[in-house]
Image 1 (cartoon, rainbow, N blue to C red):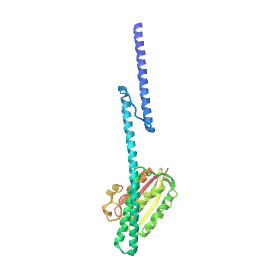
Image 2: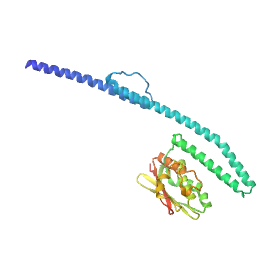
Image 3: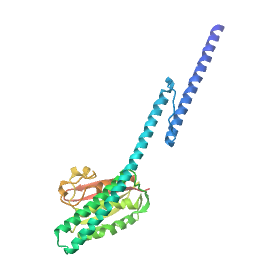
Image 4: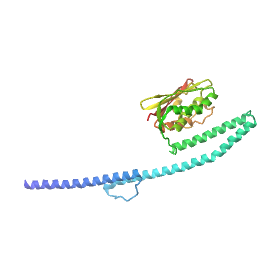
Length: 298
């Protein structure tokens, strides 16, 4: 009995020793892994040799993964810098030629007393080219994180006033009634970029609403969002086309003969989503369209 007790005691002590040994090794490995992840998060992870022992396979795998992730991040940053340079070059190099084209086209229009169909066509195409270039520049900057939105708690009425000042005259020229309902609501949005997003929607509304038509803009509050509706009684959108209208360069066959490049709504969605909002569309062909823009309350 004594001998059996001694054996059991020895087995227990030996088991306790090995338990402590492996527990300590696992804790050390876990601490090294956590330290490695922390360094990677801070951008301080440097290449160093790691033991090729069997126990270090997990450590080696994590190190390789973090190294690859760091390289991918560095490559992405370099690509962004290259794209940013290209965008700057494009916008700079095209600014002067397009401006000159507009000036000469306007001079030509003055000389022909505005009676030349050719000069009208030239002016229209120059405006289209200028809009396309500016839109592409904005898109590229937005998609590559060069432009960032900065939402702030702002009165929705301030947004309405800005849109009214910019698009009121255009609607009046087309004899479209553009009405903004006053509101005291506030939401979290970047005033400049949200005006750009809603402006693209309004521009489409004016463009595709017949003379004598109506566009109403109003806001209502929900628990977490403020909903802004832009409702027109224009040509409407076929149901099967609604999922496609936010695609880049998409234009419906029914409006292919009208001015436009198919970028505005795509840019609007990108701006709204960048502010944690979203856009919904309700429409029927021939009965008008309602674009609902949801902006966070805070």
